Image (cartoon, rainbow, N blue to C red; front, side, top):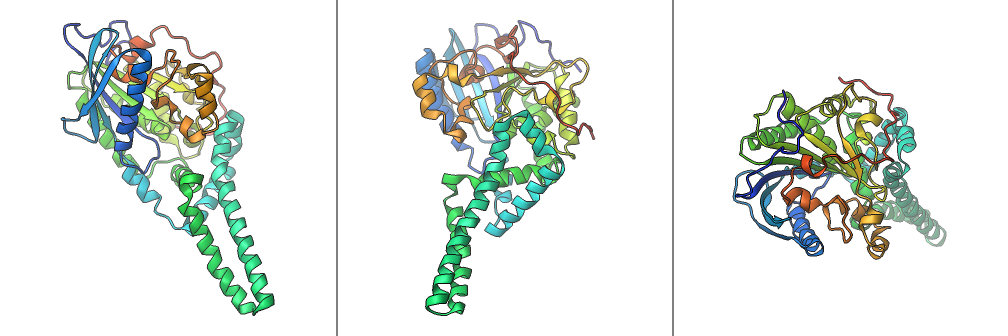
Length: 410
């Protein structure tokens, strides 16, 4: 079913009234309350508006639905009213992170086995070394913590066994080992080892298939977007960041398959995607089918933004093509680079270059030398996603070579 053509006048609203947009933001694997994203938007939007010379202000949300906020802006001489709603799944994330120390080490062993035995890890390394190394980081860090604590426990036990009694040494070792590991877990806001391990374990627990609770939540998201399509907006824009990008693929595939009501333009902005971490696993048939279906649809505009400077994302990797499911007549996504080294000043880039986790969120932040990617113009500006990137060529350095052996769509 054709919802809208990608033409220059798509979603154009009469200049006599504000441009109206509904934005749905799907976060990545994040246990925090969605107010975190409101505060990030408020702070970074103010900075970007100052740099780029437009006005933008946040207001409390009045409509029903999930957590969100309103944006009133005047950009390029046009008033814009945007509603931003966070599609929340942080409760599922928190429940998946409620593991003890030893349970997390068990997760580590199972997850490592799934990626190694399926051959996915080697293919991910061939595709992009950065995110593959990021996937190995929690394994190496957790093992390193275990070795350090075990070494300390062994040294104390040996000293007590020599100077006092061997039984006291064993008791000391038995106490130091769990206490030391718990101490490292309490410091995880500095190391991110447990957080990342839970993230990869969540994706791999069913070898690429979604947990039932997540499937149910995606159905709720699709219903909410379908309702918004009848709301008289000039554009409904879905933004998926990190692992939220592959969730958005499945949600939008469901929305379009069911034939949503015709309305304004439908846009999909994928930011810092990690799609291959899931689509390269043997049981990820649903995701692969959704990637193939959405990539050939004329019902939306799909723009995929990554940056080589983001070591946590599969930068410039076309998620459909590298997964090996590109259909005949593939239209999407338009793969472009946020070009951190060019859109950030040398001083700003030096300050952020080694802050890998912070860089993974740069797509949602201000740039002091913005180019054609500006998150706030996209979400609060007077152009639809289709209009903004009409005629834009994809990045010349994008990666499209299929490297995934699992191509089943079931």
